[in-house]
Length: 331
Image (cartoon, rainbow, N blue to C red; front, side, top):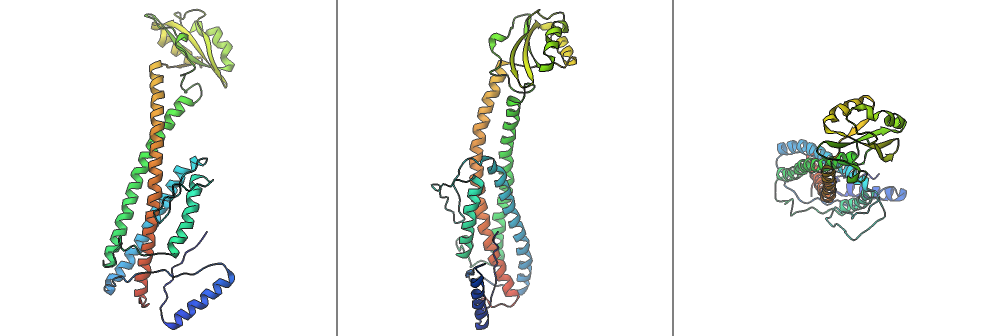
């Protein structure tokens, strides 16, 4: 892990000489490097306003760091499941390098490039005068950063909720469609010719554990006087359970279900139209999630980078204010 320190030094000869000596000492051990961090001429203001500004900037610093961490954590949660895919990296200078590919998980690829770009951005830092005009008072510059960071924090909650809702809906439906025979979709298992439907007759689908196959065969006709004899067929077997069909009169459905439950047989509700509708919904949600994933990941990358840049400008403001308060010459 790399630590970055911003150190304010007076420009008198003695201080500069000490800095050069420090650089030489650091260079010998090859454990760190030094570079100039350019801070433009900013409006100083009066002492009272600087004292207030110092406290305000400290709180804003904590808020900004918190938003960066939240954005990073959200990025980790969203991207880590796609570790077998390769996505483009994004850079703090705004270059999204779409054509650059690396054989890493999306999250690790992004963080690797971001760490490299972070170092470059800080060591070659240039104040963004277009976004943060130096003619403005320090309080106005802080307000710009505060507004941008607060907007990212609010939007993060909205974007995260929207994506997670789609994800949760899809997961719930997939659990219903892909779970065990007690809950999963029977689409593809049951054919229309397996079922009997008429004015008086209907077919029920029953999940029976392997250990109860013989019990089912011996007792299903006795669960109601209106069961069609020898109508049960095993349609599918999976894991420790099987799906059986049984035909009976419609008037006896409630009675049969109640007695089947007492015998630990699970009667499954089934409708071809409903199953097909669920499959269509699954496809729609899958497409929607994929779209939301792309939108959300791009948003996370852009705003992670933007908030980081705002944070470095905020650090520059803090160094400037603290230097003035400690009587360090600013020119």
